[in-house]
View 1 (cartoon, rainbow, N blue to C red):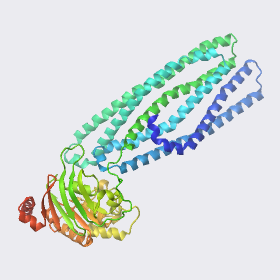
View 2 (view 1 turned 90 degrees about the vertical axis):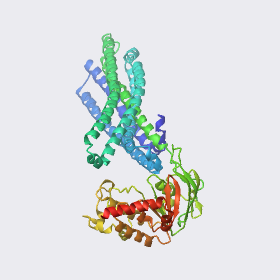
View 3 (view 1 turned 60 degrees about the vertical axis):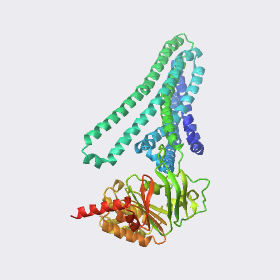
View 4 (view 1 turned 120 degrees about the vertical axis):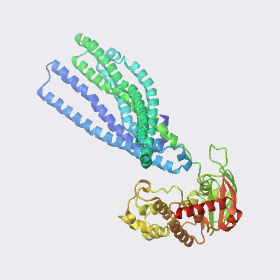
Length: 584
């Protein structure tokens, strides 16, 4: 199974547990092979009237001991094989999650959350089943089949064995053909489950939008269609996989019919004893399980293989943004001098540049304001500074060195970034603010950051203050509170570069002024970049640039830009008018 090569290191590490489990499994199988011989001895003794009470008790005791040994063996092979399969599930889920964390943000722009959730649940469960019950069944069925055939040949007539096993080639051919169909259909089932998960996840996350637009019935209909598709694909899989077991039982029944007819004739002609006939039937009964297990094995392994293939597609995915050969791992800090030199950038699968010929020089300790119409490239500009994307042409320098010389970890640790999407986790307020730290930090630092972002007074009014648990994405907070909490998360890092991407839009102008004053005091000798739609947010910046269709069309101080009578002045006048209308 080529798709399982991804687990090679794990399997080598845990090979001893698998070997011990297989040894116990083989012990159980050997004990099962002894039982028909006991039945043979008892039957032959009864037939010849030579069975004494003492012998009967001895045989009974031996059967009990065989039962105890079988039970003990089954316990140990489950402990070794099944628990190792659970360890594989744990290992693979951790590996998948870690790899997803290492991928660049653009990967998640083209892959749905529900699909990734299906990989982490259903697909990994299918792989675990293949590595647990699948391994047991394949070893068990192979050993039992070979050993039983040997015992059948030794016990009875070779011709009886050949006739009894006549249906097997037909079974092998059918199982092989059906296995390929099962693999394809199970892969389709997993893909439809991904669509189902994604539809449910998206609706739960956007339930407030659905309700506000009264679209509950429409969304239920959409979900029903996806659910119906999932049901139909599962039925297609069941139709083929459900045929395996009945088919195997049918062929097994034919074998038993042949044995009863031909074996009965051999007993009547005294060519084999009645004990041989009873033992042969017992061995044939043992052979029925491997014949049935073949169907289950094919089903389980094909499902596991299809799921492993889907998981491998993610594991083989490489991050587009990584430390390069230029990276200097000796760099551990950033001062904050930033230069953009003739920078061009376009998104993947786009022919137009999102940013064109960008030239900016931001000195350490100064502030840069960025303003422009929606879609002008403001967020893209700061994303390049965080290396969420790499530029196509030009250079970005930090402290006089190319940005690629800085290790990604160092680069992002030294930048405090508050994006437009103020994502908060469903943890406590304190845990959200101290998110950048792997360990508990001084609570005073958390409180101080909250005070600087003017959210401290709101938080202490919560039922449990900073220990209050937030709902999903911080839904229990207002928009302004979420923005200021996200700002606190960046402030507590005490970064040398602070980037605010329209992160005060939900805050009133008075609170905004206090926050900006607090940031001025905090960011002395540090670099501050503020993106805003409101001119009031960036008017006191040391330098302001105006972006339009990815180009810098104006730049200067607030007063200089007003004197230009360009886009900046136009935006400023419109906002002044809006303020006057609002105050009427």
